[in-house]
Image 1: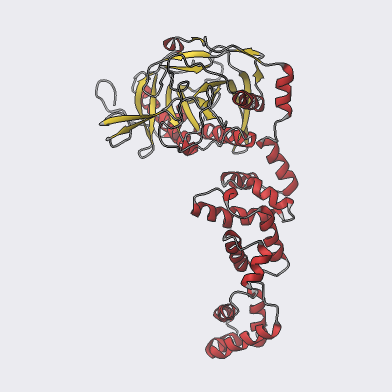
Image 2 (image 1 turned 90 degrees about the horizontal axis):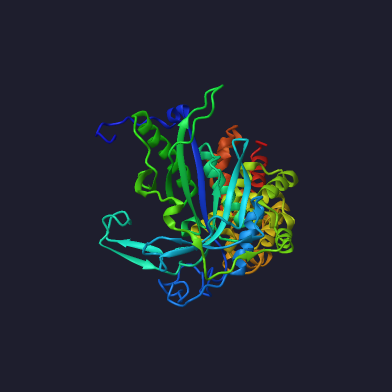
Length: 505
């Protein structure tokens, strides 16, 4: 609806992007996985009772002085190097001043015009096309506390009867990663956040669990008229910033909604207001928050209680030498060595099983079998238990042994699942479970032949149909034999034996 009350038709997303070019920049906040906070010794563990992990420093009490966490510096440098950034040999912290209930000091220690890392890039691939997203800066800061608005329907301050504040998160080390406005579609925005999440996970600098807030994304979206050949590009439009998107799906959905919303306003001759907005998961819409502040509104000035950081070239080089294999390098290697497809890698990564599959292959399993058992059976069990696959009580070497037993005919897939049950229940390794539960495939021809004869005798009508050429009728007979053998027979072997007995082979 326009400012004069007239209803403005909202275009389809396809129509909006046909006429306007989206310009998207992302600001991603990553909580670092240090044991203590950025400027004090308080614990950073997630889920503690409210306001139990606080001290005079992170509460901003008079006379309490901050001390920089060296591990947070190292983690930030690792991220910057992995993002192809230049690392500053000299930088300092600044005070970002603003009042909000979850800011106990009424300022945040951050970095302003002298970030630790700058001028980098991250390449992402969408539908076979590589997009290079520029990284403006990676800077360190401390996280804020958490406000809980109680009594309203939405969990936001509007309509709430009262608010509570938990300062456990206040002071946790945070890096903010700011892109250039290089992204031109919601799909690329989502792919960038996904790749950044995988990069941080591979560096082991954060658990990057978006559902717990250790990775949060703000999306800056604006529109401009599509370029016309022979004419200079139109200037960027006024942007909005949608705050605290906490899933990959939300990043894409929020950007899509903002594109159509802004296109509708521009079509109606309206102006876009520079403001922060909030994304509503249930409706898929964004709602206005507050007018967007500029840097001058925060009255930045150098933090007087901290000395500047001066990193030597030797320190930076040592951190760079310690970097593990990065996601893009790993993907290239796994495709070359094991024949995985890009889709396979995405699926295994999303399931949290990529490293487990690699370790299972290293233990002797084939790549397709390792992928199959971790991505399907074990990822499902992990999901049912509310844990990650790595938290299951089964090791890659156990899975490799189960795959070996299947390959040599000692187990069927059905029996293998029972072996997994036993391993997860703490009954021992796969061989011990097979022995204790008596799960190996029966190779005794006498026992199998007897079960086949019994099934034929119990169902003469089915047997006659098979003899008459109706091979589909053998299915129930196979099922009867498998039941009698308690699943400890190979179905294809049972079928072949039945057809031979009935003269239909």
